[in-house]
Length: 313
Length: 313
Image (cartoon, rainbow over all chains, first blue to last red; front, side, top):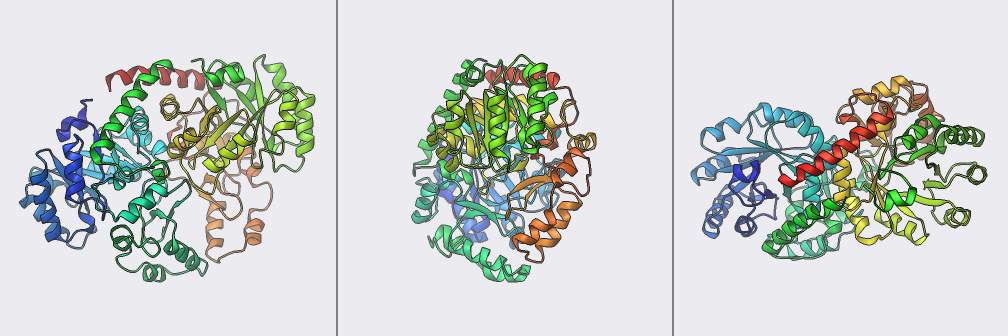
């Protein structure tokens, strides 16, 4: 399965374990890297010193390459970037911000920079900023998402048509079949989030993992579009947001209801009522909590089987 | 490419040209059927006598099987169904209504019944109603759409997991690559709409066809969710709807703004400002108006090429 994604990251399979807030600590990232894919730490939910600790533990737990996902709107962004360089991390996935701000700075320090986008427009900007690759993430993805609501099936060919650098598909991918489908559409590899939330090694609260496994079609929705669109499981918090919408609220009123630390409360602390439970639509297809190694094995087996079955089409 | 969809409809390729309001008259349907796929007349925009005329003209224009798409909320539904039987149409795609209402009645009269759904829940209901096949249509599709906002990439495997009858994927498919991707996910065939709107034979107004060709990513949006969710090109009418939303309108106020015949005005009469311009997200990938025969040839060539290229993955 060698291709330009496996060469770029020096990994066995062209699969990236998404760096997700409150889910992707050193246990998940190192297990992913040990399984032959690229593990990512999710810096979005880590104070700088916590990130440093996770990087160090991750290095001890795997000999294989891993990276860090950095939402660039993070308040301590400079400190975060300095720690990444100090700790000699060689791969950074940036999101939620302008790719021009950090790409060259990181590359000059020997770091590969991949930028996450939700639309063709932002993919073109990222390519112009000189990134080494793009993650194009569709509307069905969990967590924060784009305003154009472009789905993965639409987004990948649109980006592929205009972009020449390595392209990683994300959003709605939890099986080897979906991985193959995205590569048929033109992706060089895939980034997988939700499936790894429901892994033994993710740092999500067990009650959140169970909620993901129990989620059915229609249980997630994209909401809070006036602030930053986010896909989450519909719960009491979601219902409260919908109630507030009936009053035609200002952004400040929405922000006040959202408050602080809702994501931590939901995903890390397991408050399924008041917390923000960020997960993708494809959670409807995830029925068990498995070790990362098993998830990766299953992905590859499904991928190879689906490829073989194509001969009969 | 023989499979259970080609056997079911007695067609060469497992592709269905979607029956769309104001776009799918006898010229489009017969051209599609003549090209080796299944052509569908869109009854949703036809008075019963107009439908009868289109069926008769379609029969004269092709020797191959064709069908009729019938939104079951249509006011003259009984008259429509009687005409379908009188005119000896053998394939009906039902949508927008309960599949129990007409399925048995049609099947007893020798008609194959395929039901269009937007969610797994409705797919299960359709299978229970005894339909001969299902079209599962994702969030990215043009025109009327489901409330769960499930994308094609998510919907197809979810439905495939629970449904044993023939499964047709729809929403976001305009190329042979997307067709192959959907078949990798488990679909037996695909239904294609937007690509055929921008055909020479569609009955859409030329200005609407040009608008489809010019549409870029982010130019369509799903709106009017309180009435019936519909995906359309953002224009003055769409902006007016968004303005009205700011006043927290009642359903009646939304209905009043929508008024009557907006779809006809936009798609058939070419009023790009005040009309409803229903089209899928994948319009961003459609760059030309082509004859149906060429569209089908290109789809098949792309499909075969994509399949061959998989060997290198």
